[in-house]
Image (cartoon, rainbow, N blue to C red; front, side, top):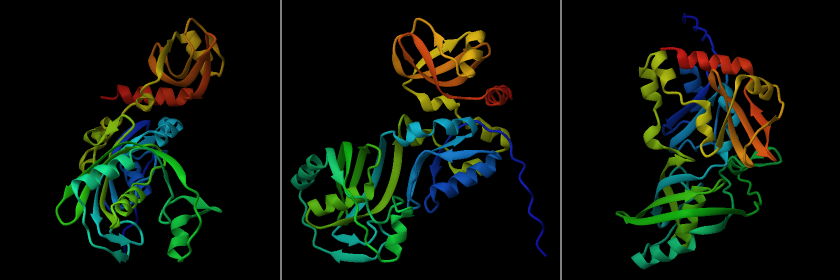
Length: 314
């Protein structure tokens, strides 16, 4: 007879965990594992990575989930290895081979294609993606053998490196805008080279201001005690890099948290991170117009109290 499962006692946890997502897990599976290890009440991630992709996956806990959208929109950097001469049904190594062609690619061909795919481009989203049509993800249609018409999307490839590798492979390193599909980029590069391609590996090495060197693995988290896991959390305001900081005295901070505008000598700014002075604590976001600090997304007093308690715990 199996022993009864121990019920995990959840607790309020606030902050950002930079996870190095392992191969084979979906983003949600990785999130749920980290949430369980931290015994967190509330969690979310900032954009999905395919199960076959690894790398930077910022996870938001508690109050930080209110600001996760900021990193859904962030530029991202990927490294991938593409196999030339072989196209697959899914654009990656898991799919059935649908075409094989000879590979004759010179350095000048890579330079030409690099220039062709740098800057604003249009992409047709792949069928094997989570993009939805009529409430149903495209990959579900693909599994049924149904091809759905997809409108091209405008995306930006900010930088692109293409390096030849052995065995008819190329290394791709690309910094891209929100909504760019790297599998599609790999396939389109293969088509432009005249031989087709599919991705063998895919790794996200940076998103926004976060990079892989800052990340922790699930394996490392599992080996830690609870205090060490909490120490891995970054403050919620880490998500607001690039915002203008404003600090309010206690009376103004209390009124700001109740949704009231504050007047001061601030310059106009679209993105503002607001802090209380005593105690020093992150309160939420705002924008400044005409000398008025106008509240945006705010923490509630309990979230602020719990965050201060966590930060004060040795």
